[in-house]
Image (tube, chains in turn yellow, orange):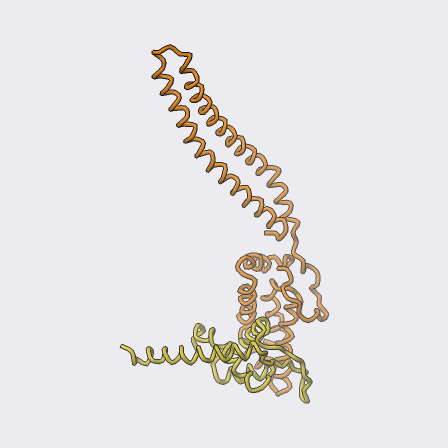
Length: 105
Length: 211
């Protein structure tokens, strides 16, 4: 998939995926790379940036199988940002679809 | 690519970042490998799914540069070329775990400081002296023109009638030239002061932060 397309929306995708439940890096990466064609490694820089920007916090949790995992949780700022980004994206993508779909002459 | 190879590749691209941050980032990938292995994947499969380590690592550098701003970009690029020179620590991550590369996290400023000192002693000092000399002599010339003009008017009373016109002309010419050159000198001096300030600022930056 086109790199330029992905760049702006992956933050939004990750935030959206964390909305329902906290997740650890591996499962986020796996789920996301199954839906959108990206490599798993792409997710980690995004998670780190979101943490630096205060959108998510992290905590370690033991697991029955394998090593302890670093979980990511949305912060208040992350939730508010997600709401406004969602709104922006829906409006924006609708407009782009109209143009690309040829509804506007 | 094995787990070790992958992590080494990530590390080498992340070199410009502080050691603690590199360790922090690598621990995410170590976890990723560990979880993948516990689910029955091989190291090679996991590495392939993660994607090109250099490309992944560069994303961290780009993000970092965006955060610190443009000025740091040069030093990061410089640091990538010379492993001993590192960008200052930006964020404290997890403490370094069994680090073999704790030395050299401080940026080496010796070269930049020596350069500042010798550049000023050998070159800048003399350049500044000659520039100041030229400006002072210009002001002197303006003052002389002004003095001459005033003297010409002062001489009017004492001079015989035939010289009146010549003295008036000389007086006007002297004072006009004095004002014109004075204005030029004013701007020249102003620019010199601005230049000096910028130079001092540049010196300080170089001395404290290096190239």
